[in-house]
Amino acid sequence: DVVLTQSPLSLPVTLGQPASISCRSSQSLVDSDGDTPLGWFHQRPGQSPRRLISEVSNRDSGVPDRFSGSGSGTDFTLKISRVEAEDVGVYYCMQVTHWPHTFGQGTKVEIK
Amino acid sequence: EVLLVQSGGGLVQPGGSLRLSCAVSGFTFSDSWMNWVRQTPGKGLEWVANIKPDGSDKYYVDSVKGRFTISRDNAKNSLHLQMNSLRDEDTAVYYCTRDRLSHWGQGTLVTVSS
Image (cartoon, rainbow over all chains, first blue to last red; front, side, top):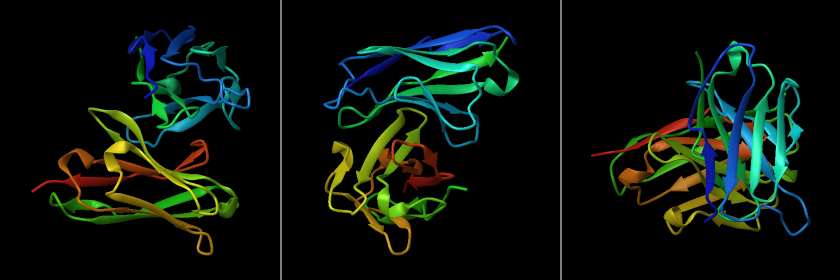
């Protein structure tokens, strides 16, 4: 199975400051069409996860533009340009290039 | 508005069975891949199964093959997960999700315990 390794696992941040989460894959996530279906999700306590980004860098509808995704091949990054209080929770990366589809272990973002 | 409303779940003894359902609205169900994903405190998020729009192809994670069956009724806009021979390690919150997880149900807790 493809292993997605996120770092850090815990990220204390100051309101208004940037934050960055890394997701590294054990295999290339480029699919047979040349696309890279790597997504990022945010989960608040007691809620279902919500997709923020698909295909490495495409923000979902309603997602603030302070969130951005980048990367290629096996290395990917989620960045928050200025952290707001509502951004706390756990962030996951996910791949659907290879079966079984897999998730990273999660990065917990909290306010300092 | 896209809605995925789940039902089913609960407490079951090891070896028992449960059926989860997901009623959807707000999008063309018959055009969408659908999935079940589960979450446990220990293992995090795990993709359990998915099914092609017309139901002709289904995929399962190895740990549930032969025990779980994903199905859909496109006429009723509903998705199902039949879970048999349940084990302690199947205890989790199960989510119904659309396509590449663009939308999620509210989740339903399945507890396997004697």
